[in-house]
Amino acid sequence: MKRTNFFWGVLCSLILSSCSSSEENPVKGLGEFSLAILPETSFSRSVDNAFYENTDNYTVEFYKGSELLSSKPFSEMKLIEQLEAGDYTVKAYCGTNEDVAFDQLYVAGSATFNLVVGETKNINVKCTPANVKVKVVTEGDFDTYFSDYTVSLKTARLDKPFDYTKADATAGKEVFLKADEEGEDLTISLSLTAANENVTIGNFSQTLTKKVAPRDFLTITLKPDGETVEGGQISGVKVTIDNGLTNEDIDIIIPDEML
Image (cartoon, rainbow, N blue to C red; front, top):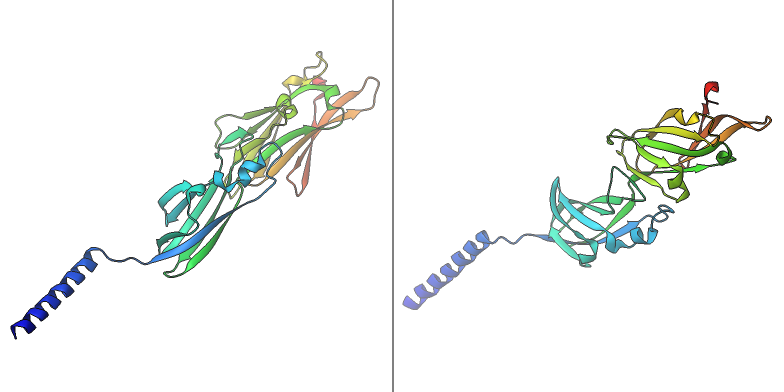
């Protein structure tokens, strides 16, 4: 009888100890996932596309709601990762998202996913350019009439306009601007310097406004509007803004008193 009581006493102690241990260290359900980053290619001629195509150059962030859980290089992630079962958002990005800069592309993407205990989820994050790209080119006999030009770019987030000069275009530079997904206004100002030193066209400036959003790639083409007269004469400039889908032509008339 005593041995029976001892047996039940030991059994109850083990059960109580097990219950107490479970309450203090609850076992949480984990879900598994593998992550793949899929960069878009051919972002721009002026940047090293190979850098953005190399997924080891990406940073990955995990969110639960608005809470940032972790941030680390993609190169440090395991083939299979684990998180508690639940809903998450993953963001991946490469580069620095400057308000405005020459040849500094920012590529980013995100995805939401749900993890379930006992399942392995495959998650793909497509990363695309997140900036507005702007480049300037000239056509026709532009250099015959103008020795220099400045295209100034301004958005609400910039304290002052960002200048894009003929020298920048000659060097093959492109401008990358931060923009909201819903779009915002880009103000484009054009200033010209006449090739003829006796012409004061350098004081002339024209301002245009264009609605832009991330992944808009704009090419601003400047072409002189010349008249066939003795010695040649310029009466204006045609500005073409190409976003890859449509061309928008703006004719700029230069006042007679500046010619």
